Length: 434
Image: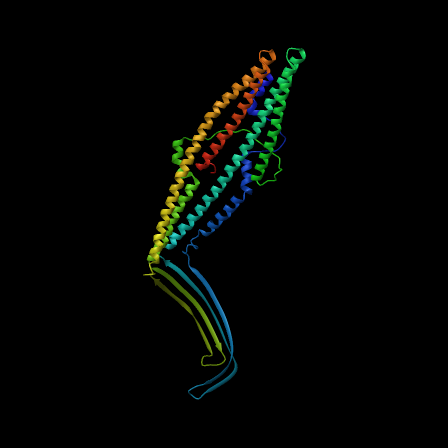
């Protein structure tokens, strides 16, 4: 009995067989998934594109410099008569021309559009970074849920293995009492039937554990038959106050942060549209060199080189009211972006309240089930000893063992439910991925 009591006390801390398999921690599982997950890799690529695009050159702030060069050669039969009476007849006269030049075009003022565009490009990059964090956050939440589901199955398997020790003790007591004549063979047979039923449960639970392991391998993009072990401990460490969650979730929830950036991006798009109402000033500068050589004609050689510079001012005074239409549409887009944010904010706040209630409820149930398990374990120990002394019958000890089995399963399940609720709260509050 002392041996059985020790087993019960150490059940949730050291249950399960010692495994020689490699133990994968939650942190290691997350690390593997982050390297292999396709959604994250795609988001990383998209984020790199927006980062590359967020430059002053792409916003139109920098000048454009182009180099041009051309060469021509023409062969003609030439017949020319001049007023002086001179006549030129030349067959196969060659004319060659070479020209090169460097041109600079620079927008000096465009109604501040280039600055709005640059801010919008940076905002798009910030939105892409948040979107990458959302992808990582979603994957991490899925990994955590699956990992702890596997830990739960391992705990359930451990409960059965611990229970089997009690069933085995009951069989030995019933057999001893039957053989010395103080008990019936019926009690022995019933104890054997109950123990075999529990062994059957053990086999089923091992299969469930194996299936859950396959699910985690699939999620980690590993070989599905990869064998490993996990830590069965499920600790609850996140203890937020609801008042703090209501305040922090608006600024920390990544989906809300994404839509906040989207509102700002819409406002920048409006600034771009309004720039059409202002004049546009361009600087143009060219340096050209040209040389022409001809074997016939008045001009046999011509060469020019020099610098040309100028300013170009344009002002769109009327374009069929298209500028006004685009400005109105941009204002509608801002309003729609705000409505999307408000809608999601309401949804997130609702989800936070539901998750918080589920979390608090699960923790309260967890305390009760921990107490129930302790009572059920003591009750089973007492019943088994009473059965040994002949104070109770086999049905009563069976009932005590069934109560212990049920209490063990409820305790494991509610601990997992509390962890799932904790994970969801952390995700909603942006605390899952830093």
